[in-house]
Image (cartoon, rainbow, N blue to C red; front, side, top):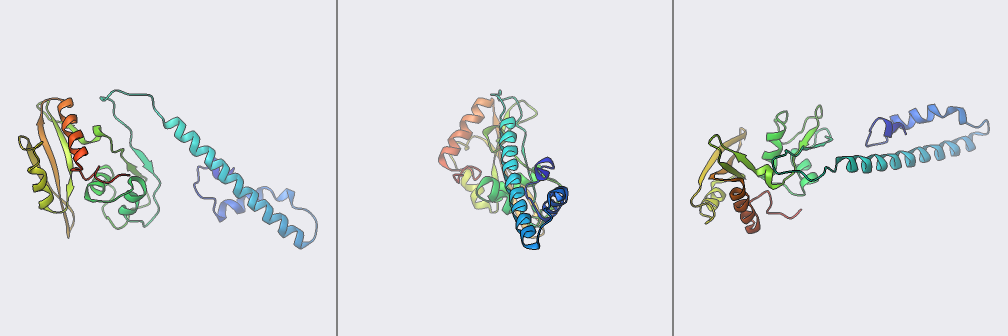
Length: 220
């Protein structure tokens, strides 16, 4: 119950000790052996209650987070993940998306400006985990047309391969240099000039089916 009330994911030694102190009035006035056995049962009971409470909390949290159907114009709130201190960004990418590549890491970096080191995620702030739906990869240009974020690549060969795709030959492709660190440089590729959202979504869907987009190339 202490872990549940404080939204803690782990029932640690501190919470167990606090629970034992709160229940000290139940300690039997008997021999040492019995007291230790009773204490063990109490701790196991507290842990079981904590796990059950956390399970109920997660189910309720999931249920409350299920939103009704929305129009394509409505933004989707990103998921917020708890951060384990010292973990590399690739660990979180693997944990929440099921795979890792420059596109996934770049998405996490763009949505979390406080992360400046790929090898170590700071623990002072939670990490935003955007949902990888079609709308996330669409953008609107100043002239009212639409663009598609195709992905982020660590070499120009992948960029040139997409440039030659028949679906993109008539589009304006822009490769933006993304300097991640002194020795890591990526290329962020976008295709622009789509007259409508529907046209952009149609091309995006075709590229996904081809397996041409790194954000959708690996089945999760």
